[in-house]
Amino acid sequence: MNKLSKEDLKSSRWRFNLKMLRTAAQIRQRNPNDFQSATLTFFGLGGRDDASIIKRMSRDAEGQRLIRERQALPEGILNPHLYQDYPTGSLGRCYFEHCDLLGLDPNFISLESAKVSDTLPISDTHRYIYYRHRDSHDLWHVLTGYGTDMAGEAAIIGWTYAQIGNRAYGLIALLNACLCAKRGRFDVFKTAWSGYLHGRNSPLLMLVDWQKYMDKPIDFVRASIGLSLASPYRKFHMQDAPGADKLKVKP
Image 1 (cartoon, rainbow, N blue to C red):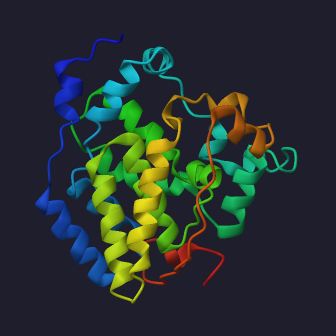
Image 2 (tube, helix red, strand yellow):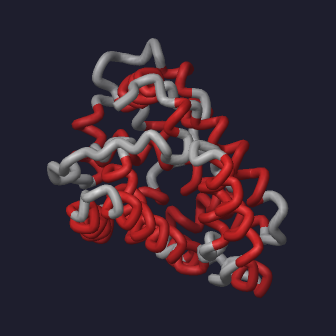
Protein backbone atom coordinates (compact mmCIF):
# COMPACT_ATOMS: atom_id res chain seq x y z
CA MET A 1 0.00 0.00 0.00
CA ASN A 2 1.27 3.46 -0.88
CA LYS A 3 1.81 5.45 2.28
CA LEU A 4 -0.24 8.64 2.26
CA SER A 5 1.40 11.67 3.77
CA LYS A 6 -0.22 14.10 6.17
CA GLU A 7 -0.02 16.61 3.33
CA ASP A 8 -2.08 14.29 1.07
CA LEU A 9 -4.82 13.95 3.65
CA LYS A 10 -4.77 17.59 4.73
CA SER A 11 -5.00 18.92 1.18
CA SER A 12 -7.98 16.70 0.36
CA ARG A 13 -10.27 17.65 3.23
CA TRP A 14 -13.77 18.86 2.48
CA ARG A 15 -14.14 22.59 3.09
CA PHE A 16 -16.38 25.35 1.72
CA ASN A 17 -15.01 28.54 0.23
CA LEU A 18 -17.65 31.27 0.48
CA LYS A 19 -15.50 33.77 -1.40
CA MET A 20 -15.41 31.46 -4.44
CA LEU A 21 -19.17 30.90 -4.22
CA ARG A 22 -19.83 34.66 -4.15
CA THR A 23 -17.53 35.21 -7.12
CA ALA A 24 -19.22 32.37 -9.02
CA ALA A 25 -22.65 33.93 -8.38
CA GLN A 26 -21.43 37.31 -9.63
CA ILE A 27 -19.98 35.76 -12.79
CA ARG A 28 -23.17 33.81 -13.48
CA GLN A 29 -25.23 36.95 -13.02
CA ARG A 30 -23.14 38.72 -15.66
CA ASN A 31 -22.90 35.76 -18.03
CA PRO A 32 -24.65 32.45 -17.28
CA ASN A 33 -22.57 30.70 -19.96
CA ASP A 34 -19.19 31.58 -18.43
CA PHE A 35 -17.57 28.24 -17.58
CA GLN A 36 -15.47 29.79 -14.82
CA SER A 37 -18.60 30.11 -12.68
CA ALA A 38 -18.95 26.30 -12.76
CA THR A 39 -15.33 25.76 -11.70
CA LEU A 40 -15.58 28.27 -8.86
CA THR A 41 -18.87 26.74 -7.71
CA PHE A 42 -17.30 23.27 -7.65
CA PHE A 43 -14.36 24.34 -5.50
CA GLY A 44 -16.53 26.68 -3.46
CA LEU A 45 -18.67 23.69 -2.51
CA GLY A 46 -15.62 21.80 -1.35
CA GLY A 47 -14.18 20.35 -4.57
CA ARG A 48 -10.92 19.48 -2.80
CA ASP A 49 -12.77 16.63 -1.07
CA ASP A 50 -10.74 13.79 -2.62
CA ALA A 51 -9.67 11.93 0.53
CA SER A 52 -12.06 9.06 -0.22
CA ILE A 53 -10.74 8.33 -3.71
CA ILE A 54 -7.11 8.85 -2.65
CA LYS A 55 -7.53 6.23 0.10
CA ARG A 56 -9.48 3.89 -2.18
CA MET A 57 -6.84 3.98 -4.90
CA SER A 58 -3.98 3.60 -2.43
CA ARG A 59 -5.54 0.35 -1.14
CA ASP A 60 -5.67 -1.19 -4.64
CA ALA A 61 -2.64 -2.71 -6.39
CA GLU A 62 -3.40 -1.00 -9.70
CA GLY A 63 -4.19 2.24 -7.91
CA GLN A 64 -0.85 2.04 -6.11
CA ARG A 65 0.91 1.63 -9.45
CA LEU A 66 -0.90 4.57 -11.02
CA ILE A 67 -0.07 6.81 -8.09
CA ARG A 68 3.55 5.63 -7.89
CA GLU A 69 4.20 6.02 -11.62
CA ARG A 70 1.90 9.04 -12.05
CA GLN A 71 0.61 7.34 -15.20
CA ALA A 72 -1.08 9.97 -17.31
CA LEU A 73 -4.31 9.55 -19.22
CA PRO A 74 -3.84 8.96 -22.98
CA GLU A 75 -2.94 12.18 -24.81
CA GLY A 76 -6.09 11.96 -26.91
CA ILE A 77 -8.34 12.44 -23.89
CA LEU A 78 -7.53 16.15 -23.96
CA ASN A 79 -6.91 16.18 -27.73
CA PRO A 80 -9.73 14.07 -29.24
CA HIS A 81 -8.64 14.78 -32.84
CA LEU A 82 -5.89 12.20 -32.28
CA TYR A 83 -8.63 9.55 -32.43
CA GLN A 84 -10.40 10.71 -35.59
CA ASP A 85 -8.81 7.97 -37.73
CA TYR A 86 -9.36 5.17 -35.22
CA PRO A 87 -11.61 2.28 -36.31
CA THR A 88 -15.31 3.10 -36.56
CA GLY A 89 -17.05 2.04 -33.36
CA SER A 90 -13.86 2.03 -31.30
CA LEU A 91 -13.79 3.84 -27.96
CA GLY A 92 -11.33 6.42 -29.31
CA ARG A 93 -13.38 7.11 -32.43
CA CYS A 94 -16.64 7.34 -30.42
CA TYR A 95 -14.93 9.80 -28.08
CA PHE A 96 -13.72 11.92 -31.00
CA GLU A 97 -17.18 11.89 -32.62
CA HIS A 98 -18.81 12.87 -29.31
CA CYS A 99 -16.50 15.87 -28.89
CA ASP A 100 -16.60 16.82 -32.58
CA LEU A 101 -20.39 16.66 -32.86
CA LEU A 102 -20.90 18.88 -29.81
CA GLY A 103 -17.92 21.15 -30.36
CA LEU A 104 -16.40 20.13 -27.03
CA ASP A 105 -12.80 20.99 -26.24
CA PRO A 106 -11.72 18.92 -23.21
CA ASN A 107 -8.41 20.79 -23.14
CA PHE A 108 -10.25 24.11 -22.72
CA ILE A 109 -12.21 22.68 -19.78
CA SER A 110 -8.98 21.39 -18.24
CA LEU A 111 -7.24 24.76 -18.60
CA GLU A 112 -10.23 26.68 -17.21
CA SER A 113 -10.35 24.38 -14.20
CA ALA A 114 -6.59 24.72 -13.67
CA LYS A 115 -7.02 28.49 -13.26
CA VAL A 116 -8.63 27.67 -9.91
CA SER A 117 -7.19 24.29 -8.93
CA ASP A 118 -3.59 25.33 -9.53
CA THR A 119 -3.94 28.17 -7.03
CA LEU A 120 -4.82 25.74 -4.24
CA PRO A 121 -2.18 24.29 -1.89
CA ILE A 122 -2.69 20.58 -2.63
CA SER A 123 -0.19 17.74 -2.58
CA ASP A 124 1.33 16.17 -5.68
CA THR A 125 -0.60 12.91 -5.16
CA HIS A 126 -3.85 14.79 -4.67
CA ARG A 127 -3.22 16.91 -7.76
CA TYR A 128 -2.54 13.79 -9.86
CA ILE A 129 -5.77 12.12 -8.74
CA TYR A 130 -7.83 15.29 -9.18
CA TYR A 131 -6.51 15.75 -12.73
CA ARG A 132 -7.36 12.13 -13.49
CA HIS A 133 -11.05 12.41 -12.59
CA ARG A 134 -11.37 15.97 -13.93
CA ASP A 135 -10.01 15.09 -17.37
CA SER A 136 -12.01 11.85 -17.61
CA HIS A 137 -15.39 13.63 -17.49
CA ASP A 138 -16.21 13.53 -21.22
CA LEU A 139 -14.80 10.03 -21.64
CA TRP A 140 -17.17 8.91 -18.88
CA HIS A 141 -20.05 10.59 -20.73
CA VAL A 142 -19.27 8.41 -23.75
CA LEU A 143 -18.83 5.19 -21.78
CA THR A 144 -21.92 5.55 -19.58
CA GLY A 145 -24.26 6.98 -22.23
CA TYR A 146 -25.30 10.11 -20.33
CA GLY A 147 -25.69 13.16 -22.56
CA THR A 148 -24.39 16.68 -22.06
CA ASP A 149 -27.89 18.15 -21.54
CA MET A 150 -28.66 19.35 -18.00
CA ALA A 151 -30.44 16.12 -17.02
CA GLY A 152 -27.56 14.06 -18.40
CA GLU A 153 -25.05 16.24 -16.57
CA ALA A 154 -26.96 15.82 -13.31
CA ALA A 155 -26.82 12.05 -13.84
CA ILE A 156 -23.13 11.80 -14.78
CA ILE A 157 -22.16 14.10 -11.90
CA GLY A 158 -24.25 11.96 -9.53
CA TRP A 159 -22.49 8.92 -11.05
CA THR A 160 -19.12 10.59 -10.46
CA TYR A 161 -20.02 11.38 -6.85
CA ALA A 162 -20.67 7.67 -6.26
CA GLN A 163 -17.34 6.79 -7.88
CA ILE A 164 -15.10 9.47 -6.36
CA GLY A 165 -16.79 10.28 -3.05
CA ASN A 166 -16.12 14.01 -3.51
CA ARG A 167 -19.14 15.69 -1.90
CA ALA A 168 -18.90 18.70 -4.20
CA TYR A 169 -20.01 16.42 -7.06
CA GLY A 170 -23.06 15.40 -5.04
CA LEU A 171 -23.94 19.02 -4.33
CA ILE A 172 -23.44 20.02 -7.99
CA ALA A 173 -25.74 17.17 -9.10
CA LEU A 174 -28.36 18.43 -6.64
CA LEU A 175 -27.88 22.01 -7.83
CA ASN A 176 -28.32 20.94 -11.47
CA ALA A 177 -31.53 19.13 -10.56
CA CYS A 178 -32.80 22.21 -8.69
CA LEU A 179 -32.13 24.44 -11.72
CA CYS A 180 -34.09 22.01 -13.89
CA ALA A 181 -36.91 21.84 -11.34
CA LYS A 182 -37.24 25.65 -11.45
CA ARG A 183 -38.14 25.16 -15.11
CA GLY A 184 -40.68 22.45 -14.36
CA ARG A 185 -38.48 19.37 -14.77
CA PHE A 186 -38.76 17.78 -11.32
CA ASP A 187 -37.96 14.39 -12.83
CA VAL A 188 -34.28 15.37 -13.02
CA PHE A 189 -33.98 14.67 -9.28
CA LYS A 190 -34.82 11.05 -10.10
CA THR A 191 -32.36 11.09 -13.02
CA ALA A 192 -29.55 12.35 -10.77
CA TRP A 193 -30.37 9.69 -8.17
CA SER A 194 -30.41 7.01 -10.87
CA GLY A 195 -26.96 8.21 -11.98
CA TYR A 196 -25.69 7.94 -8.41
CA LEU A 197 -26.97 4.36 -8.06
CA HIS A 198 -25.44 3.50 -11.43
CA GLY A 199 -22.09 4.86 -10.22
CA ARG A 200 -22.24 2.77 -7.06
CA ASN A 201 -22.80 -0.38 -9.12
CA SER A 202 -20.11 0.45 -11.71
CA PRO A 203 -16.47 -0.66 -11.54
CA LEU A 204 -14.06 2.03 -10.40
CA LEU A 205 -13.04 3.67 -13.68
CA MET A 206 -10.23 5.63 -12.01
CA LEU A 207 -8.26 2.35 -12.03
CA VAL A 208 -8.63 1.57 -15.74
CA ASP A 209 -5.62 1.82 -18.05
CA TRP A 210 -7.40 3.47 -20.99
CA GLN A 211 -4.43 3.35 -23.35
CA LYS A 212 -5.01 -0.32 -24.13
CA TYR A 213 -8.72 0.21 -24.82
CA MET A 214 -8.96 3.27 -27.07
CA ASP A 215 -8.71 1.27 -30.33
CA LYS A 216 -11.12 -1.45 -29.15
CA PRO A 217 -14.88 -1.56 -29.95
CA ILE A 218 -16.74 0.42 -27.31
CA ASP A 219 -19.13 -2.44 -26.51
CA PHE A 220 -16.12 -4.72 -25.99
CA VAL A 221 -14.61 -2.16 -23.63
CA ARG A 222 -17.79 -1.90 -21.57
CA ALA A 223 -18.05 -5.69 -21.36
CA SER A 224 -14.38 -6.06 -20.46
CA ILE A 225 -14.52 -3.64 -17.54
CA GLY A 226 -18.04 -4.64 -16.46
CA LEU A 227 -19.73 -1.31 -17.12
CA SER A 228 -23.45 -1.10 -17.92
CA LEU A 229 -25.10 1.67 -19.92
CA ALA A 230 -27.23 4.37 -18.35
CA SER A 231 -30.96 3.82 -18.00
CA PRO A 232 -33.08 5.87 -20.43
CA TYR A 233 -33.94 9.38 -19.23
CA ARG A 234 -35.64 12.53 -20.57
CA LYS A 235 -33.11 15.05 -21.85
CA PHE A 236 -33.36 18.70 -20.85
CA HIS A 237 -31.33 21.45 -22.52
CA MET A 238 -30.69 24.82 -20.88
CA GLN A 239 -29.24 27.59 -23.01
CA ASP A 240 -28.12 29.49 -19.90
CA ALA A 241 -25.98 26.65 -18.53
CA PRO A 242 -22.18 27.18 -18.22
CA GLY A 243 -20.53 26.37 -21.55
CA ALA A 244 -23.85 25.89 -23.42
CA ASP A 245 -23.00 28.77 -25.76
CA LYS A 246 -19.99 26.83 -27.06
CA LEU A 247 -21.89 23.70 -28.11
CA LYS A 248 -22.28 23.18 -31.86
CA VAL A 249 -25.50 21.19 -31.40
CA LYS A 250 -28.16 23.52 -30.03
CA PRO A 251 -31.43 22.46 -28.37
